[in-house]
Image 1 (tube, each protein chain N blue to C red):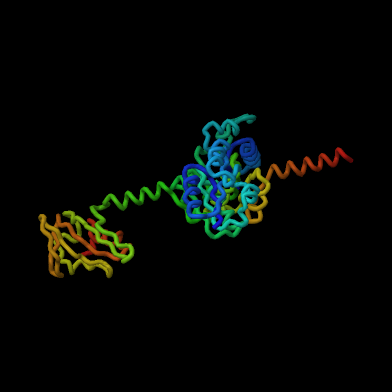
Image 2 (tube, rainbow over the protein chains, first blue to last red; image 1 turned 90 degrees about the horizontal axis):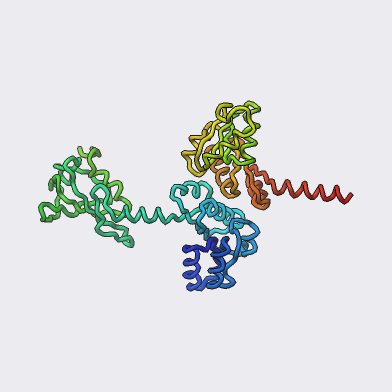
Amino acid sequence: MFIMIVGGGKVGSQLARELSEKGHELTVIERGARRYEILSEEFEHVALNGDGSEIWVLERAGIERAEMVIAVTGDDEDNILIAQMARERYGIERVIARCNNPRNLQHFELLGAKPAVSATDLILRLIEHEVPRYGTLHLLDLPQENLEIIELEIADDSPVAGAQVAEIGLPDGALVISILRNGDGFVPVGTSVIEAGDEVLLALDAGLEETITQWFLPSAGRVG
Amino acid sequence: MFVLIVGSGRVGSAIAKTMLREGHEVSVLDEEPGAIAMLDSGQDVGWEEAGGSFTVGTALEIDALLEAGIEQADAFVASTDGDNTNLVIAQIAQRRFDVKRVVVRVLDPLRASWYREQGLSTVCPTQVAIEMLEDAVREEVR
């Protein structure tokens, strides 16, 4: 595939390395003269010096036959415009734009510069996933099987504290598979009572975590 | 009408002063607090004293646009020193805030002409200069 990378910084050059190892044909456009020197030593004719948000530079670099454009400059406005022009002016379907400031993601979407990749956003999501919010712990993800297992701690003021498992009224796709109390675990039946301080294990269809967590949070008030 | 101008350089500040003089409500947004000096210069009274408003902030920050009054704006002028910034914020003004009249300063003739075809009112000073210079050359030759 002929791939055009705009922006030859750390991200752009690493991408270029990996994509060329996979056998793709590449062009890397870099605006900075110094950075371009470094790039051309490594990538030779693949590197091109110029402002990749300028139409004539894009065309000189061969955008008309590019099958994929990746805009990874350090400037969000540039990335948005490059992605927008690649898609709308040159009809390229595979376009990826880097979003440096996650607060700008909304602009990428508004102007059709999608998909936008934000490293900060990715890291935040990973942290969210790793660090339990509202006492939720991700125990197991089975993406292939579309299942996940989570653990929740029942707070004193949780609406399910004191309720029977069958009373909670969990939606389809969620099942209480185990209750851990005072270091002992057991598999509950419908009449088992969940107590404050319990750790509850749930098996869920993927994507239900947010909804289910609400069921167990204080002030949710869904029992009854 | 209410005019919001982003970028208070030579161009933005001149438009702002004219619009205010003509009796319009004018709000200027610039990331540089010192940019208000351009609005004050050459006037008998200061910009804000004369009734203009000035907000410090970047136009990609929605909060700054809101503070500068984009929701009330009848016209929006993108006149920062960056073509790409101008093209992005003009599209935000047009698509997200439905501002009726959006005018964009774009120095690069190619981008100016393509985005004009896409429905933006771009003004390209470079293109204007090129045409004037060409005319001037023909005059000389004649």
